[in-house]
Length: 340
Ligand code: CP3
Image (cartoon, rainbow, N blue to C red; front, top):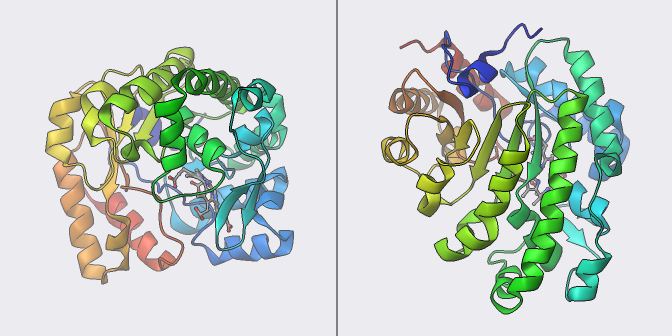
């Protein structure tokens, strides 16, 4: 039994006493307590692959920030690795893949991953669930197939992901073949997370906004729909950053919550998405660099714009690494103290 199930009730459109709040990328990135554990472990991957430590840093934001949910400490790139494409996390530079996908034979070599291929995260979920002891729900997650695909082709982060987009234009049949394998792997992985105790799932389509609407409807949306259709055990949140051009279609997905980034107008999004979904978001993470008064004002403006029902408070994207944890706590506390 959950002692605080605000997030789940808000996701399902049930009545809540107040708006629940958590932050994308709250585990790691900002807390000094995270940096200490990370320094002890040597690196990011070591942390992700060690369930005890992953559990510890997952719970840190619940203890230190008072958020209404924990999100399991892992990364979206564990899926390419489980499919046969290992990644490295290069200090200060981000993810890097030694091998990338270039041709049909490369795609044939990729396996459809089972949840067991990401055993360490599944174990971390089970451990965290036990350790949380019902204090708040635990969020499981995965990257959306398009975003995972873009890393597998590109091999690292990129401003344009033009190699990945080029692949869609020049090798559409192969692209679908790889997206299919990623989708099946993701479904297996998410089902494993739910079995291990994840209370709600978020799908991150971080690079949604770089596709054209036509490409998004052909190469991204149908695969997210497949994942949503395959999972009915727990609520699902779809966060497609920059995908303002398919908000109506996102509203038709078989999921409970749609994440909004800070460029998406709240009233306009509500009108496009309709009343049958919860909305999550969406202040600009950079607001948290402002003075206290501005943070409080902007947070209250956001809450008022969304209204009392079907809203989960969050930023419009992940919290940035150099934001002062005290400012993050001010954002969280402002949401928790606000009443309509
Ligand atoms: O939300 C959480 O705090 C839970 C853990 C989590 C991480 N990555 C840990 C992490 C989650 C949900 C992710 C998702 C993720 N990873 C996304 C989608 C969300 C988004 O921000 O759009 C993406 C695109 C990635 C890929 C990735 N992982 C990049 C580009 C980087 C480098 C830059 C950075 O710090 O985000 C990572 C590394 C990473 N993943 C870190 C953490 C805590 C930083 C590693 C470190 O400690 O140095």
